[in-house]
Amino acid sequence: MTVALMWEARAVAGRGEDLLAWVRERELPGEPLRREILRAPQDRVLVITWWDAPYDAELPELPEPDEDLVSRAVHRWRFEQVN
Image (cartoon, rainbow, N blue to C red; front, top):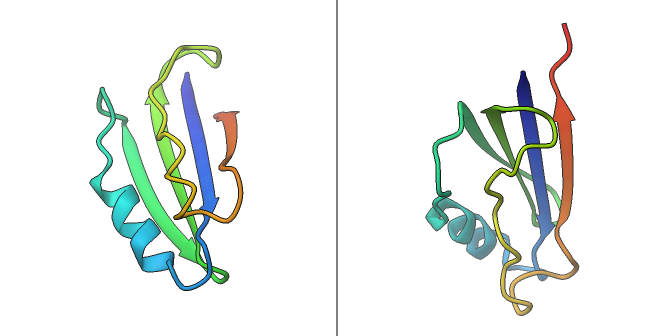
């Protein structure tokens, strides 16, 4: 089964590039099948990782950035691939 973890944060106004750099520097303990980093207006950054694992598996996730970098708590979602 393939599980996708989504991690989305919104930077403090004007700090989108700092948040993007912070995300790029983070390494996960373990190698996902795939990892994508995306950005959107309002200084938002999205990270999607795909894992070969059961839906409820313990998987490494990005932590919360320091409070001075983000304007709200990180949003996290988990999805399973369907055929």
